[in-house]
Amino acid sequence: MNIITHIDDIDLSSIACKIESVAIDTETMGLMPHRDRLCVVQMCFGDNDVHIVQTKNYVKADNIRTILADTSVQKIFHYARFDIMMLYHYLETMADNLYCTKIASKLCRTYSSSHGLNALCQELIGCSLAKSETHTDWSRDVLTQKQLEYAAYDVFYLHRIRDKLNEMLERNNRTEMAKKCFDFMPTRCMLDLMVGDHYDIFSHS
Image 1 (cartoon, rainbow, N blue to C red):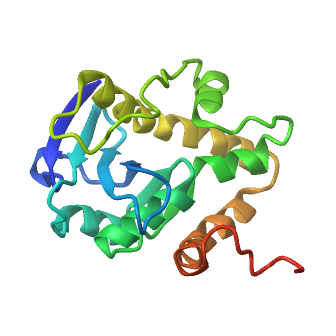
Image 2: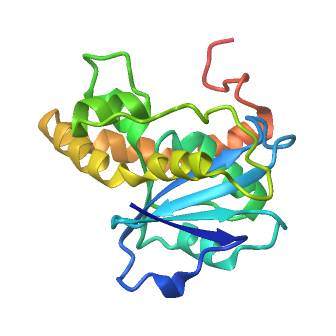
């Protein structure tokens, strides 16, 4: 794996091939978009390179925004609901053409209650993720090597996991249901930003 670092935006000139899909994750100061800022955006385009962008100056990040809005590029997330909310809140661009490995897992791996990224890595591709940097300061000026590796591995395997999950969705006749869930995700994100995740307009109460 080759980690390429950027400040404020990704350099698309370093990506030689046509972009068909991209795995994306974010690192933030916390879980509340109105309080906790977006610090890092990491991307992998299905090759051996992982691009890590530190969002220091709140610039518009035109290249990241272009990728997010491009309907021809599939964006792969693990727990897309949070990441696209943070990206939309800070970059003012809603991701389109989404795939969420957590949602896909919950639809086709109903034999398991473990749908975290590490569980998927272990079962589907036979590797484990180190989670020692889960609670760390992502706003620091210079990220440590451990932080960079932690962020990189959160996207490095997502293409392979998506492919395995797609096979399982197809086998269990749940591909169309998964797509409908993915298509609803931007609306779910907007609801989270509007009323928060503790208020469910679909509940009986």
